[in-house]
Image (cartoon, rainbow, N blue to C red; front, side, top):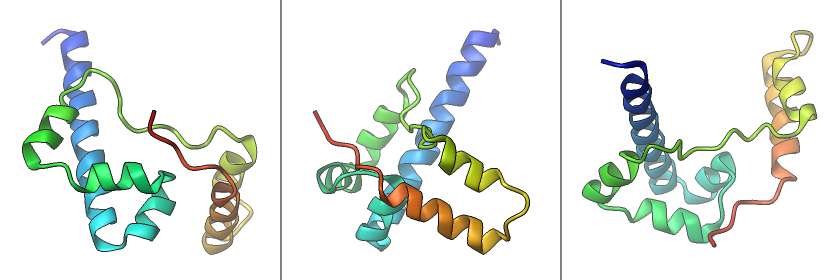
Length: 106
């Protein structure tokens, strides 16, 4: 297997794992799932209502579907800081991420 085809296979695996996790989070507790993923209500509805076939087809894309949410240095620093206790670091990063706008379709 070439390096490129191996990388594409890994991207598909990440995509499928992400989509399945997103659907599970949204189906169990939609508001919390939306918050944890940083997505809009409209995008949450689309993800939660995908059939298994649609999910697999979408996951087969050669593009990574999830996005790294730590565009802000303060969020990444807060999560990586060794001096803070786990719960405090998680709370601080949750507050910082909650202030970011959710993603919109279109």
